[in-house]
Image (cartoon, rainbow, N blue to C red):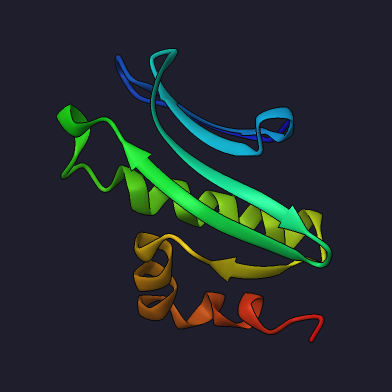
Length: 106
């Protein structure tokens, strides 16, 4: 499990990799407020769905979650990222520094 905890005065943000559930999660003050689901197939990791609590939208949480998940894939594996979720497709399109994940190992 990987996590990145950031504490502020009253807010604790934690990113978790939950391999048994094929999921990265984002928790704020111990409450899950977002997740990114994936499936591993051969040498590919397919990001299939990203969701953030509707009450927390507009806080840039989905972007932070995707960035943390992709950073984890980059450092922990040699898998090629296949963005299936439209949000992940758009996110990678906007962040050129992550596009190498789409072709590595090919």
